[in-house]
Length: 269
Length: 316
Image (cartoon, rainbow over all chains, first blue to last red):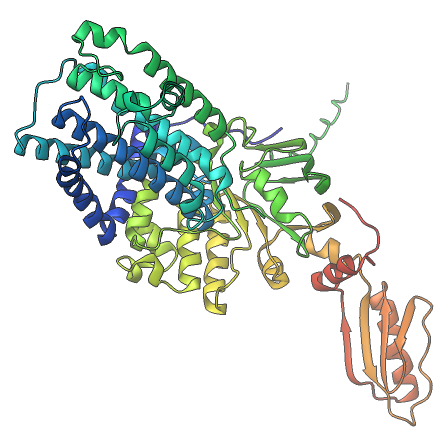
């Protein structure tokens, strides 16, 4: 016979409250990192200034182009790169292993740790949207749901890909190398700066399968009513063109989620 | 008819809070834990001792729910710590051998963050007082000394009022005063009914705290029992110094002569009769046994014998 678990007299905090508690601590940490705070404000301002000056000659109007570029850049640099570096640093510092000894589950630890980066990403996109309005380039979206889905699904995909990338990243310093392939590929081929329609067909087909490309496609469909080939569509046409990018995002979510199941909580011995 | 005396009930044995049965754990081909079994009752301290690499931490990680067992079973309060994690965690406090805390949070913020994730946390002020860190509440964690960080880590382990506490080398890096404070903390936990499993390299710590001890070697328990039972596996020691003109001392049949004059050392499992024989001989021959020592075996002796592979009567 074993002493058994006592009948619970107190209900534990909900999953959301546990994540919120951890996220509060993580946000405090972030706000104490002045460099990170300054960079997170400067980056979108630079983007607003730089993209119009580049005059990339795409078919998407400047406002939606700026917004979709801002979302893509924050997903790649803030969500993905920052999270890989943060997860690895916390693992090497044995913080993750410590957290796992409490009531937080593994996914809750990862999500709570990610919240500040996700909030900054959101803040940056809002700053760029304000910048677009100030430039007088704001226009009403053709469809509202698709951009929202793009941002949420893109954030989820990049978070699980960040967790998965820690499998082959030993130190925060090595994250600068291990994240390069995805960062370079998405920055150059996902339509952040150069329209995919200008690529050769074979390259465009491959580019559309990258994890950030469907986010840009969905954003430009919803914000500007433009397909990846530059065709102008209405709300119905935007939804008609959405299944493939949505499927690609779902596929990356599954791939990243499966890979992230091998997440290591402690440094290799 | 004469009423028969009621049959005496068998003595009731309290149910264990921790139950480990034939636990195994491997890393690839290397089997770090090779079938260990033990129980820990509520209100009891159980110490796992062993040299580095004996398998202590590998075993504890299964108890902590951080790794699945490769074989056998572990039950904490009747539940599997890995498969029934959500049920077990509110009642389990863990202090890892080494762990990290974010350096830019203050001590109080660290505890507040942790408390927000727990079912029934102590008030932060109480937790700080418990580990004598109340005067460091507003200090950043990175500015704490190693001992203060260890005590903060301990406060986190105890913040949820756990019924089972796993302490992996709890006083490593602590100064003697802090170590004694931690010992008192463990005694208080036990007095409140918690079951404590600890590992330590300090045998003095095990002697101070543990009700029962198991000594691991190469992933197996080679000695287990109360401290007295473990010490009994080793011979007692008698030492004395003889002057040059003293007659030859007796050679008791149950004593092994380790060294002879001038400093004589005998090992024996029959301390009292051998000592009595020696004293009788000294009295009869008017011999002064200078610097006479007679000492029962210690936990340290048993531990060292296990480390050297010379322990007797292994039991688990």
